[in-house]
Length: 198
Image (tube, rainbow, N blue to C red; front, side, top):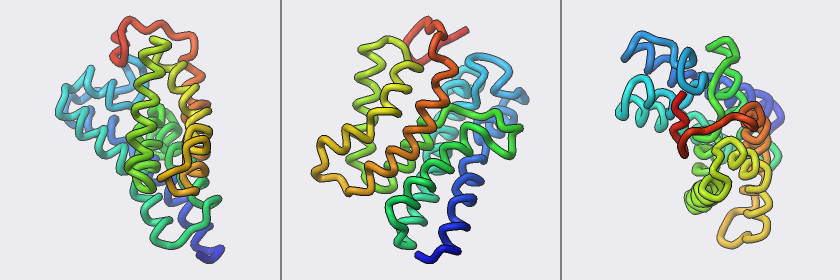
C-alpha cells in the first residue's frame, strides 16, 4: 500500500463513520432527533426507545457496516497493521463525532465491532461475549464499555490463536475511542441493563 492510499483511506474511514444513521432513520420514521431524548446519543439503543425495534435493527446493521467497510477495503489494499489501526480509529471517531451531524453522534461500540468483524468474525464474537460479561459483572454499561475498550487488545494478545496479529492493532485503535467516549457516562445512573430509560 502506498503512502497516497494511506492518506486517502483514513479520512474516508472517518467519513464512513460520520454517516449518522440513527439520526436519519429516526427522523424519517418519527420526525424527531434521536439525540433529544433517552440517553441523548445517536445509537441503535436510543433509536429503539424512540422509533421501535425494526428501525433500531436497521441502525445497528448500518453502524456495524460503517466500521466493517473501511477495514475491509484497507485489508484488500494490503494495509499494514498501523494503517488498519488508524482506519478503525477514524471510523469509530467519525461515529462518535460525526462531521455530518454537528459532531454529536453515538458511542462507537457497533462501529468498533464492525471493524473487528471485518478482520476476524471469531474475534468479534469473543469481544461481544467479553462486553456482555463485563456489563453483567459491573451492572453499568458505560463502565463496562470503558473497561472493554481499554483491555480488549490485551485479551487478544493473551489469547492470540486463532486470531490474526493485526487484530490487536485494530482493537487498540477502535477501543481507545470507545473507552474515551464512554467516560462521559462514567457516573451515569442506569435503571436497567442496556436500556437505561430516562
